[in-house]
Image (tube, rainbow, N blue to C red; front, side, top):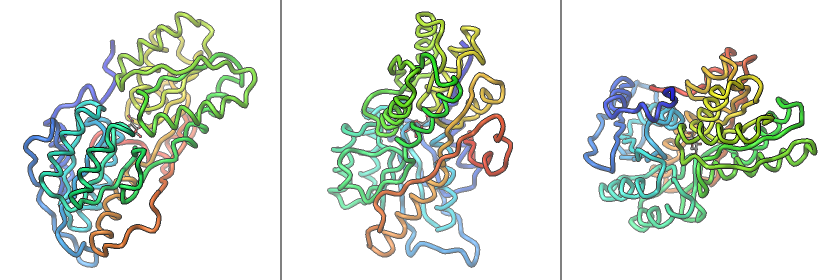
Amino acid sequence: MERQSGRRAFSRREFLGVAAAGGFGAMLLGGCGGGSSSGATSSTGSGQSKAKKNYRIVLIVGVLGDEFYTTMGCGASAEANKLGVDLKIQGPKDFDPSEQTPILNAAIQSSPDAILIAPTDKTAMIAPIQSAVNQGIPVIAVDTTINKTDILLAHIGSDNFKGGQVAGDALAKAVNKKGKVFVVNVKPGISTTDARQKGFEAAIKKYPNIQYLGAQYDNDDPTKAASITSAVLQKNPDLAGIFGTNIYAGEGAATGVRQAGKKGQVKVIEFDASPTEVKDLKKGSVDGLIAQHPGDIGRLGVKMAVEYLDTKKKPQKKNVTTGFTVVTRGNMNDPNVSKYLYKAQC
Ligand code: T6T
């Protein structure tokens, strides 16, 4: 099996290196909330806006080593640096609420001024987030969210249902509006990827000659995504297309298609724009990417937290939707598109 993902190749040193190289007031930490070290707050140049106080903010991502969250961290770190805020970035090694909860609990113990979090499950993360709120810590959900949104200060992320619809229409176009298609998804209970699947299903209903084979779950593991894809291809040698709902689903789907010798024949549309996904697009194993704007999510998250801490006024918009960009072989070198391709480091 070829190496597929930044996540599997992740090392803790690499992550710490990212923060250091970026020169930002941030540390990226692996593991279960252990040993958080404080990043130095860099001074800002004259004329730049500054937060009223030297706030401490924690960003807890969905999983470390995932370039979507790395890119979000880059945006958050840049904003923290600009505002003179101390930002720590932490996250679990797997996209799992049982790993994310102790990290959140440790962050709460350190009494930060605000927490930004990408909840790994829309139900399981309600109680841990409620604990933060009960201690008076404002919480902003970034990317993913929870079912109990009233306890959040706000949510910032993509319109994932719409993104799924765009993916559905793109795949329908790629397969000439006919044939069998299926979805590789992560796991049920994640607000973003659930919505993408729903949006995709709503879109392909419009095409009577498309037969939907349903969705299968890879547990955010590209190797599992590849084996799911191989099995579906073996059962359905006439498969026309696949939608991968995130980086690892997409990367694994492309691998499965290549391993079956069906590159170009089976069309693949994927969410996100990791370096591997972009390489697969360039080489023809993938036909389109729905790139989110994670840098904007991170930047806006820090900005909103600081505005709230400075003024104590709740944000006017509780749900901030960031955009996405459809990346194709035809437009991937356009600077207005390539600026949204994800980073493996800042
Ligand atoms: O697609 C992103 C993110 O939006 C989703 O919530 C989880 O997966 C990613 O991080 C990509 O792997």
